Length: 405
Image (tube, rainbow, N blue to C red; front, side, top):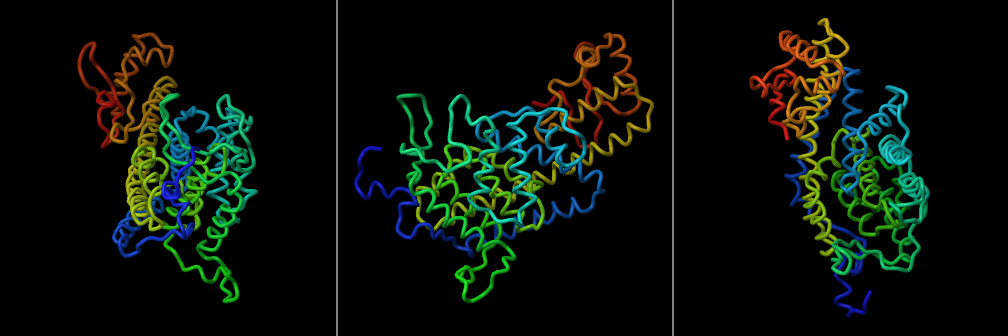
């Protein structure tokens, strides 16, 4: 990095006097916190009201969406079937039918953060997480340091743009500072853990004031991303830390809250909010407020996901009481898995006799008879006529699949 004046060098929060003592105005975000806890309570109440079998399926769906989302934020598109298989295996629903070490590693990290939230977060655990994300020791075609903090002398920067026209969005502390920075972060994360049993006046941890769980998750994410301790995987690990912090607050796994899914939906605003916080002062109230508001929206969207899952369960129960052949069940499951257009899903273009034939291997005439039979049984609804005929599952509240993006 070219030589700079002292004033120019102090453009990041980690370079400011007083770092890493992050602060926020609790009064300024009080209303946002109240709204967040209201929507969180509604979501948890909805989950409490459903049966065990349905809740396991919903848990799988929400976990799958979180895994897909945290990877997608980094520009990585995972294979949906492989993620579903990996998650289902860890939930004990089915044996894994596919084996992708990369996907399994991400799911393992999420499971460890969410289920073992009461265990201490330390250097060794974080390094195991990062190693699991890169089982081959490479990021793309580039070999990286795996299972240890970065050690290279090169400046750690977040850069975008083509070669020769790069834009530097952020510069992290030098590698030789990482160990010391992480020691402070991990000590704070442990000291502020909800229900921390250490309350002796003689302990330095006793001087740490209680902090709201959502605000703590926001601070933890910003702090970790600011240090950027690994060569790669910092974003996914930072969101795993958020999941762990929220699980510690809830006393239960937190992927049903859908925070990564919502961060993906507002990805550019997410990057911008983080960047502004990292370039601002140690008063990070705007970042905490943004995070809490995003959390609220994630709870609202998760409520919709849970309701959709319940819609699917009711539909399958209704369909099971009718005489359907294997072809019809296969197509109905495909339509249900596509989800509702209202949540950005839907079977693209709607189901047609031609698509039915390709999916099942049946003749077009058989496909047409099967579709008409499903329509007569109230399992499908139809839009258009003649060659424009399109079918969608007849689930109350779901829009026509033909209207889906």
